[in-house]
Length: 80
Image (tube, rainbow, N blue to C red; front, side, top):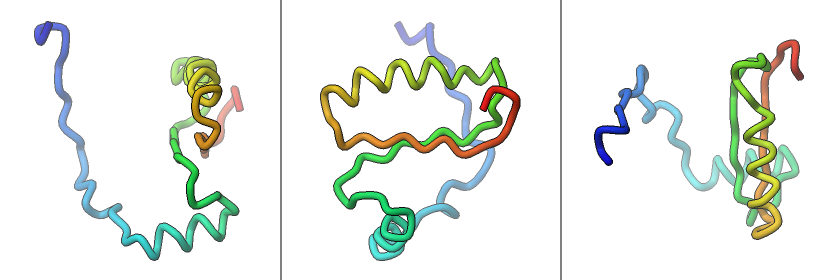
């Protein structure tokens, strides 16, 4: 099964984006996001090949199982 996967390392240091719990809570308050929400985010240009629609369809099923899921889709583009 491993032959079906290929790992592509991140091109940037993700440690730059780590936040403390206080900062996370502050951002949630500022955006009006419930503290118990499970937040998912896809930051990408809205283009057909990014396929936001598949993510939204898949998420619909997850939300039915757990209503705390919140999807953020920041970005611009023709399919927004």
